[in-house]
Image (cartoon, rainbow, N blue to C red; front, side, top):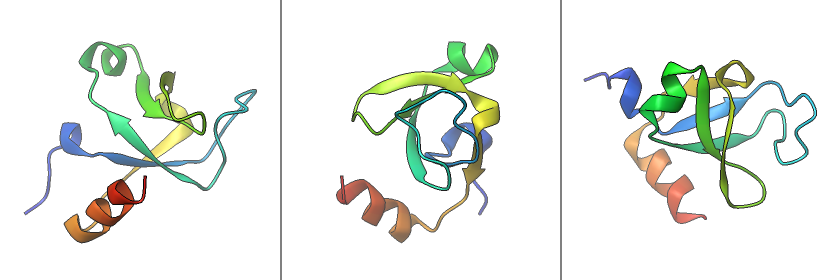
Length: 76
């Protein structure tokens, strides 16, 4: 069963223009934020460990098996 777009929890960074707290080719966790999504942003937990808004165009959504998502979440 495929998940709806809004349930995706992880993204891959493909761009990090002037963002020191993002690393290209790295997987990040996304927090739900409907207002940010409507404005073209994602709320991402970045390298600082805090969540910030970044342009959605900096990321590609990932569809991962549940076991992989759980392992990534457990790793910190």
